[in-house]
Length: 140
Image (cartoon, rainbow, N blue to C red; front, side, top):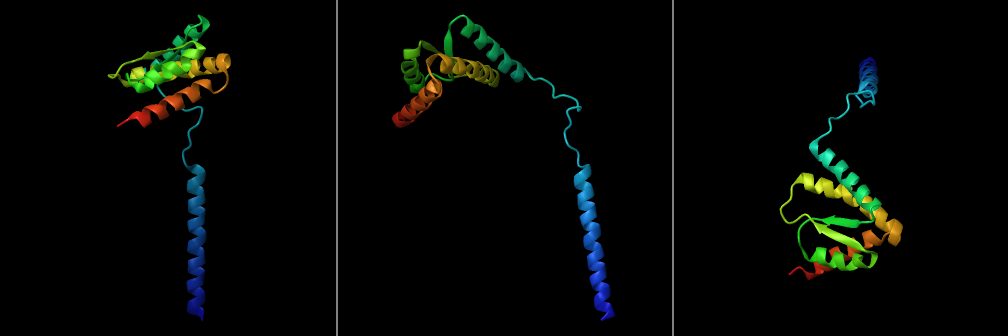
């Protein structure tokens, strides 16, 4: 009986020490702080910001443009869908790099918001969805 009580005591002590160690580890685990050194800005970050800036300039001058990658049926369908709102489609071609993609991403975020404001909420998103569906359906 004494031997069993001794084993239970050791097991209980091990459990308590393990729990304390896990809780201490979680409490002192390194979390990212706003005071940490900021992440360096990459060239793709700059291209994204440049795209947003270019779009803001174009929207102010009255141009509504969506940038697409490649020259596909998607581009033709999208052009037809958004022509009603006076939106132009600009293709960056079939050969593009991540800088061009990031520029287009930043540009389209601003353009799509402007299109929604002028043509109705969700118009740009719906046109993109519709063009993607029709392009996919036409793929052999």
